[in-house]
Image (tube, rainbow, N blue to C red; front, side, top):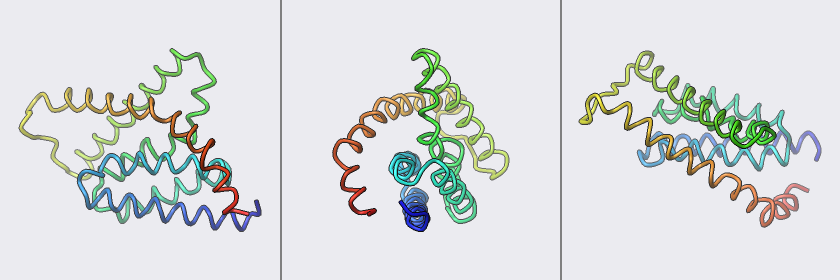
Amino acid sequence: MKQSKKIALSGMFAALQTVLLCLGGVMWVLCYTAPMICGLIMIILRDSAGTKYALTVYAVCSIIAVLFIPDKECALTYIFFFGYYAIIRDKFEKMPKAVSLLLKFLLYNITIAASQIILVYVFAIPFENELGRWTIPVFAVLFNIVFALYELLFPRVVTLYFSKYKSRVDKLLK
């Protein structure tokens, strides 16, 4: 693929991810799913244009998210984890399965905790609700369940893309 097509494709994917993140900022239910969907979109971009272009789109969308997305939790979830995870996930798959799974969950928990700390202390978003002191443990357990499901579905989505949609995408990009 020519470099001009890769740049145009990257711009389109950056725009698509920006729109999805804006929807995540407007609709509460998409606050966490929009960054996950954006991460899955990176599979197509990384395959079609390459890792360099995918990382560039991640950087551009991260800057746009911080500046313009109204829901900072949605933006930071994308920036701290889901925006780049699809790009680097292959590095984990080369390791032994137990080590890979442990490192994935460790990375996820550290980045989500860091994003929540930034939300509370930098953006002054209150973290208190009706659960009181149980908020953080419940939040951690639920987010780990969500990540486990994401991790379970990720290879299936990749397989689906390569088996059904890759040939269609390649035809569109010629």
